[in-house]
Length: 574
Image (cartoon, rainbow, N blue to C red; front, side, top):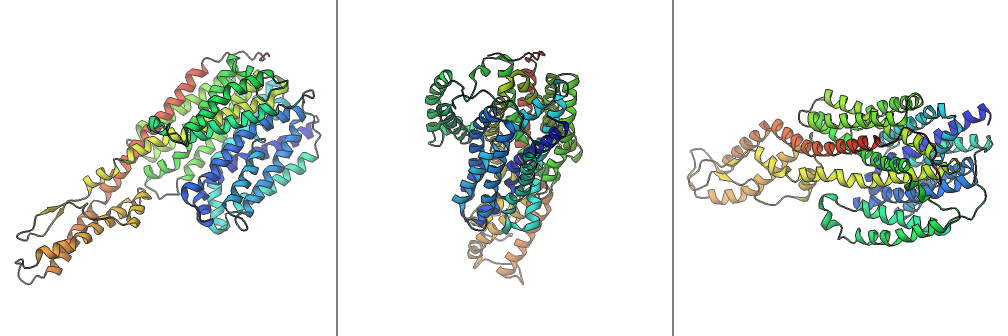
């Protein structure tokens, strides 16, 4: 391929990776907005992300295999077109559709998206000589890392620009980029390696699709902190049963297939098996990014929605690390970069868990995020893609990269359920901890009336409960004061009844006495603002501390497993 054509195709594939990776995060901040627009419940709205994840995971291995058979550039271009059609339909659902229409459009979008990343990675990897391959894949890692982490920020900014009622533009933004990709791609000749014509493994494709769907959907519904009970749920165990029944059938089908959809020999080769395991670990670890904005907001005591800029900080360091890691791979080895990456993530996670969560400061937070950004850039794509490119047969690079991405997706599916459990367990202690800080109510010194009452007496309105559920460190005091005010108001009628006929101080009425008493108590509550905010921050940070300690352990496991990799770049054999 001519140098000009190669450079054009590099632009094409990098643009494709950009929109594919960005789209996974750009929808997240708009989920509530879309749910309100289409009049659906919050728990139902999760499906706009879940169904994309499932369809994306299913389409990856199939698209990769087809690309190996018929040409990477051709199938990549078709994937972009399908992705664009899905994006158009998703956007139109804002104005002409309903939630069911949006879900169908998201499936179409995901089918196209599943062919973008693995095919692009395989194409770029094999288009460059071994001595420059790391640098080329470093560009892939940089684009993927930056677009993934910036997705939520771009989504929030776009919503602010066009308004919440025009959320369809979150999807329309993909269309001009897709058009540019298709136009440039049409000018270049497809010279990628294709396999000799063979029968498509239809049975394997269908059984693998059902396997992936059943496993990933079951995993997304498991509560790993209450595993015994959650495994009994009808949203979990039936899908695991389907997976266990189909797994041996799938293996049998693949062993008999002329050209299997997934090469099972990958799992027999030690280096490929380790590479796939590391991809799973990276998938688990990268989901820790999801919790960074909320943690940063709690540490810095800033309002909800402002923490997205902290992810941008991580993206900067990730964008530096990915291409740098690619160059260092060419000079040293992929194993060396993985060790650097997992080591950086381990250090960053430990700082968050043991320093920032215990003694919140902006300095320790920024230092930790810098380490985590570097770790993400070093591990997320470049070294693992490089290793898979080396170990897999040259005519199976797309399907090999698809398998790598699929395993990472399984890690992504499991991780949030594990990590969020640490926050859930800490939040359970929040009411009792806050009650320890809120002043005890002392009634007016009137004969026949006890001096202490339980401030928790009476009912709490649904609006007040929602205010507590949605509170952050900047609004928790207002929620607590409203709670105190509500409890006192609930108690006042009873207090008035008890005071009837009671001898009061001269020139004092029941109403004036109660009003002064209420104002004095609320003034005491005002004096505890800092204590209430610090208590809320401390309790939530204890959960984050455990969460990031788990992330550190995941990184440490990745570090240890990386040591098992051989430095050899010997090709995998059938």
